[in-house]
Amino acid sequence: MDGNCKMRIFKGVPASGGIAIGKGYALNRMLPRAVRSIVRRDKVEEEVAAFQRALARSKEQVQAIRDTMTDQSLEHYQILSVHLALLDDSMLLDQTSRMIRESRYTAGWAFENVLKGMLDTFKRIEDPYLRERGHDLRQIGHRVLENLAGRQPDAISAIKDPVIIIAHDLSPADTIQILNSAILGFATDVGSRTSHTAITARSLGVPAVVGLECITKEYSAGGQVIIDGESGTVILNPTEEAVQEYTHKRKAFSQRTRDLAKFARLPTVTRDGNTLSLMANIEFPEEANNALRSGADGVGLYRTEFLYLNRKDLPTEEEHFERYRKIVEKFARRTVTIRTLDLGGDKFASQLDLAEEMNPAMGLRAIRFCLREKDIFKKQIRAILRASHYGKIRMMFPMISGITELREAMGVLDEVRLDLRRKRVPFDKGMPIGIMIEIPSAAIMSDMLAKEVSFFSIGTNDLIQYALAIDRVNEHVSYLYEPLHPSILRLIRRIVEAGHNAGIPVSMCGEMAGEPLYSYVLLGMGLDELSMSAAAIPRIKRILRKSVAYEAKEFVGELLLHPTAEEIGRLLRKKMEDLFPVEGF
Ligand code: PEP
Ligand code: MG
Image (cartoon, rainbow, N blue to C red; front, side, top):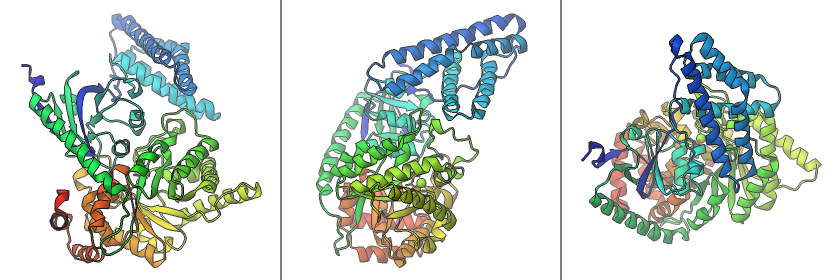
């Protein structure tokens, strides 16, 4: 037997629960870098011919994808037509061929140079529509480089078989193509539990393991794969026994999910009568039904930036409005918390041409971007206000770092409100406005911020990243990403106290809120609301319904006396094992 056919087991970061068993599909997402070298004089024409072939092959591929698209949206079809036109542009061919001949650059290197020059020109174009074409150029540039390197570029939407994707990385734009596809699950080299790729996988209910470091190298095409998204295990070439074992586990997982579903309809009341709201985090309106089935009391975080991904133009006000209205109508009298655009970090929208930043998590993202691009911001706020007429909406701003930024955002909101009033467009005049507390400076200033808003929502994914200086998507430092770090617990306590002293509710919508291990601590901290992926709701409900709030509060007091995350973690695990033996902590 070939060594590659032996069963091998890998451990990664459990990103999204459930078990998938099936054929693997290696998805290539790394951009080949052209080698900077000079070709021999007698090889120059061969190099030009290789470039022409790569160009022709790219055209064939785009044409073939477009031909399958009769039933797809016109918009997608148009993008591919733009790609074809760019590939046909004689400038690309002529300039690259000339550079290969005159400078004797390799085809890839010459093409990269030409591409870079053209992209710079696009960036300087005033007209936004034409400037956006720079993104299309970059995409076809990737394709040509892939073809020059002899590799086949893939699109998830083109995969029709039920397979498990093996990739170096998947962007959130890739992951959302999994919605409505036959993909069974995925495994990636990079990523962490709080990367947006992992968050989307949980929203879609697709088993996923990330941060495996080298799974793309270890996987050989066509092999069978098992993914256990609960334990973070990936098995390549499983034996017959392993397939049987995991088929049983898959059944047991489905049974557990069905058992837990019974809790969905029950209220979240502790044994001593404290009520909490358990809300859903959603990325797409399509998730609304699932969230309701899981027992969500409303939406605690709607990540609207997903509306911007995978498209060539910006969403119109009507599109925003229709989406929001659809969701609030689905949730009827329940609250829907709409977060204004949070692009940047690990979420990129191609059409906005965000600058490539050295440090995107700390760059021009979220509210900073919106305050720079006020037209985009206003369009969204108008749509949210208009939708508030049809249901119970709360709006919140992401990444607020302090009072000045908050006031500036409120100023924009006031302008939009005034305009709607003048035009007699109906909206909810009392719509609550809140902020995410996810930057340490905001946590420190939470007493002052609380006086200017109607609610707080703690974004632990970013708060932990910034407080502990741990890149949340970097698997090499993920061992330091510790929600139980005493500094984090102190920050949370401070935010909750500040909110309550000012009489406003405090929610948590970071991934910490949906982790069963932390639910008792969060209850003890006094959070009013926890928002999480829909699938997590029933289990958290089961734990909270068996808890006593005042005991949890006392226990948190004890935990806070300990100086390390390790000690706190040990004590907490022991407590959870004692209190909730069926949960298997
Ligand atoms: C957070 O930072 O905790 C959060 C909920 O926002 P996002 O994960 O979208 O950055
Ligand atoms: Mg955040």
